[in-house]
Length: 227
Ligand code: SF4
Ligand code: SF4
Image (tube, rainbow, N blue to C red; front, side):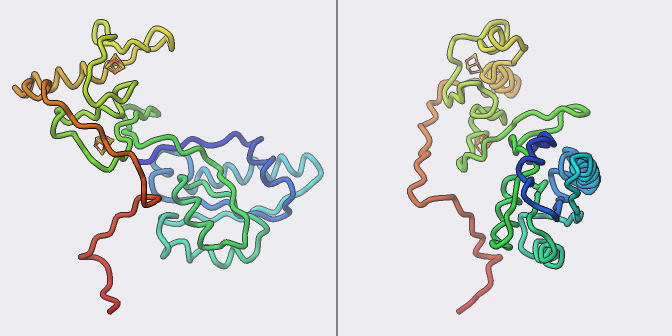
């Protein structure tokens, strides 16, 4: 899932300082699951900014609306009525949703209410960990199902670097956290699978060049025949 954290309310208040009426737009997708941008968080943020502005003697009218997804034009169309009533939108969706809602209503300023952090897994209550960089060329078949880009601090495609100690990444000491070495995890998994021969296979460097701009993904079987 996409993991995000809420921006500090003070930051959001700064962004919307010139406005008298704003819409807080939530999303029922990943940001609801990571408790950052769903209906509940929309309500909490709306109350916080209403109170803060009223305390400053500069009352702000705040509308609230949450839809299934903000990365989908069908659901973004549902914001039409409320967008028409406000000076600005604060979106609590991930960076994709914020941009896509902004594209739908290009004449209304849109502001991020969250910081989009990563593609992560919910490993414990209130704790998420990065598992994928969405690199577009998955090598999990070669690494025992453990992503070397997300799990190795240096994103080494061919590790380990030689700096790990007792299974911990060498960055553990400077950052004062026990960070498992991604390549130790890969080694252990391949060992358990009886596939250690894969450790000596060189994974070629990825082509990170985005010569054609932002990546796109088209499923021909799902696109409409417009001929
Ligand atoms: S290799 Fe890692 S970053 Fe790339 S798609 Fe697979 S899991 Fe994601
Ligand atoms: S110690 Fe392990 S996780 Fe850390 S940078 Fe080296 S190979 Fe990557």
